[in-house]
Amino acid sequence: MERPITLGEFIVENQKDFPYAKGELTALLSSIKLAGKMVNQKINKAGLAQILGKVGTENIQGETQAKLDILANDIFISTLKNRGEICGLASEELEDYISFEDDINKEAKYVVLMDPLDGSSNIDVDITVGTIFSIYHRISPEGTKVTEEDFLQPGKNQVAAGYLIYGTSTILVYTTGNGVNGFTFDPGIGSFFLSHPDIKFPKEGSIYSVNEGNYIHFPKGIKKLIKWMQELDKKERRPYTARYTGSLVADFHRNMLMGGIYLYPQGSTSPKGKLRLLYECNPMAFLTEQAGGKASDGEKRILDIQPSELHERAPFICGNSEIVEIAEKFI
Ligand code: AHM
Ligand code: MG
Image (cartoon, rainbow, N blue to C red; front, top):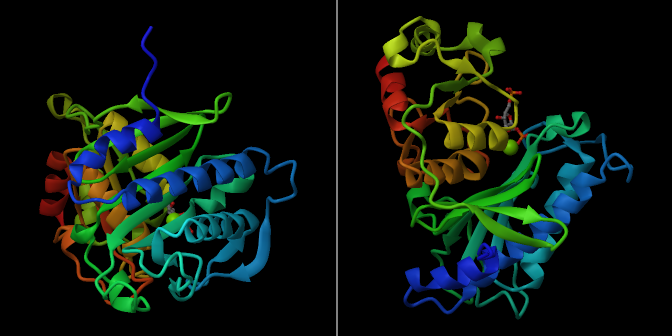
């Protein structure tokens, strides 16, 4: 029997997508893999290790931080820094970006933006959480201190993006702009194996994921869209099925495998929605497009938005192209 290819083998094999690459991106992806394994191990024994619960601090967005939010943030920062493949990092959990100026980092050409533990309100109740990452080439010259400009790039500049989903199994899904592939972690062996090659949104999908508790705050177009998705029309597979966990990674992963649409629209109390453009929307939008779908803020392509601040939010709609196009018409 042929054994499945490991993530490490796959990354090296695909280095040829980058003819001028010197292996730095390969090494960076392998650092993300290592940090992901470490976070996965912590999450799996969180109930035993007294790392559930809140720490009593808030992040820059004024959201309560969970112990695992901070732990995951620290693990990713130290792992990526120690291996020297990045010159800077921005995280949903940190107020400002960090610049790495040690000898091993200062010639590095990549910056990473991440949400180290997405869906953290779900940690204490044993529901799937994830890590989202996004990788860009720095704009400022190599060998100098990184600047905010290196992080405020439109999503279309991403070199790679992906997520780890800590669910019934742990899966790492990523793209370097050449399709989307998923690798399931085998804890007995300690390696990720290719389990979901060339993922595409299935055309026949009809799931919708939105926090309908916020319905009253949604713009008219979104309200109409939700009602339309609930109407009966067998030919169009309506009514759609509602599924929402409150973990973007979990909702996105399910919809990408089964087909459907995810929405976090603006509301009267949150004029730009909740999700962060740089740490959540952009990486998911890159994956969406690479999986044959569409990601929009209701009017324009997410990947075309020029960010103006690190923790900027954006209304977010992503999923099967045809359904997102219908949503845009309603809006
Ligand atoms: P987090 O990054 O602080 O966990 O917040 C982002 C999460 C997403 O995973 C999820 O889609 C959304 O917030 C859920 O928000 P709500 O509880 O308002 O539905
Ligand atoms: Mg998040």
